Image (cartoon, rainbow, N blue to C red; front, side, top):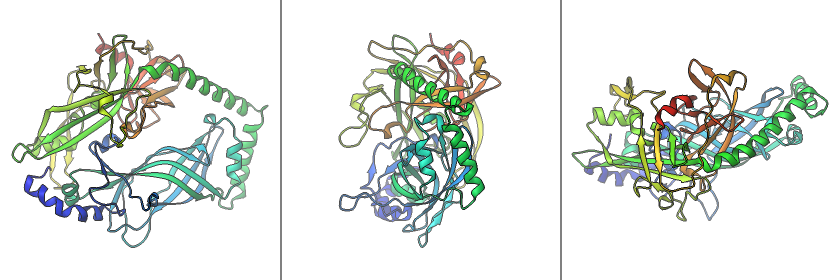
Length: 482
C-alpha cells in the first residue's frame, strides 16, 4: 500500500535501517537508479540498486560460485549444474529469484535458467542455494567444439556475464525504499571449480565418446551439427539484417496515487515491438503499453486500497535498433526516443479487454481478495503508430500449421529492456509447438521480450511472444492491423 505523507516523512529515518535489513551492505538511497532497468513481468516497478565500489574497485559478488558438475550430454548440448551459495548479509533477507544474461564459461556461451525458488539468507553463515542452477551449452551455437573438449580437461572455469538478484522486501522496507521490489545487478567475473564427472570414469567415457563423434567430420552426428551450425549462422546473418530495422525497444511507465494523501508510486514495463506497415505501424502486446491491467498488486491497490491509476501519467517510449538508450548519467535517454509525451508515438488500437477473476493475497497485509485482471491470450495485443518515414516492416507467414515440420523459430527481442546501454536485438533459436490454436515455446519469455516477433527461416512472422512461454499467432494479430 502507498504511504501517506506522514509515513513517507518518517521513511527518511528508516531508510538506512531498511537497506541494512535488505543487506548486501548497500547504502540506502545513494545507490538507487531511477527509472529502474526493466526485468521480468513480476518485477514491474522494481528499483535497481548497484553494489557500491571501494577505492574504485567493484564490490565483491555476494554469490559464491562453488562448482560445476555434469548433468547430461547428448549430440545437441552439454548440460551442467552450477552450485552456488550466498555470503552472510547484515541481517537475514530473502531472495526471490535470480536471473542471468549473456553468460559465458571460459568464453563459451552458456544459458542459465532463471532460478525462481525462494530461499532465506543468513546474517551469520553462507547459505547454499537450495538447488543447482541449470546450465546448457548448445553445440550448434559454437564455431568449434575444441573449447568444450578443453573445458572438460580443466579444473577451473572462468564465468562472465550479468546476473540479477531479486530481494524480497517486508512492509517496512517497502515504505522506506518506496518500492515493492528491489533488484541488485551483479556483474559476473568468477573462477569456478570444475567437478565435472565427480570421479566417475563411465560418465567421462560417455562424454568423450560423444565429443569424439561430434568432432569426427565423417560421422552423421557431426555432419548434422555442422549443417545446423551453418544454418544458424546464415539465419542470424540474413534474419538479423532483415529484422533489425523493424525492431523497437519499448518502455512504459505510469503512476498510482493515493487521492487523500497525494502520495504516489511509479511503475514500469518494457517490451519489444516490430513494424507491420510502411507507414510506421508497430505491433506489440497490450501488457507493454497498459501493464497495470495485468498486474495483480496494482489491481489490489486500486480495487481494495482505493488508490487511483493516474491516466495522465502514462508515457510510452520507443527506441529503434542501434539507438543509445542510456545517457551519460546512466539513466534512460528519453529525449532520444519516440514517445507519447512528444506525440511522436501513439497507441492506435487495442482489442476489447477480456477480464477474468483471480484470487489474490496481499503479501504485506495477508488480506485476501478477488481481483479483476486482463485475461492472457489473444486480446493481449496493441497497435502503435510511429512518426517519420522510411519504415521497413516485416512480412507475415500465412499459416502456423507447418510448425510440426519446422518446429524451430527465431525470437527477435530486447531482453532486459532499458538495462542495456544500446538497443542491440538478440536472435534466439527456440523450439515451438502448436497446442490447439496457441503457439507455445520451450523458452520462457525473458525481461523485455513481450511483443517480440517469432520468425521462420524465411524471415516471416509466425507469432509474437506474450507472457510465460505463450505466443499469439500472427493470423490473430493481423485482425488488429487496418
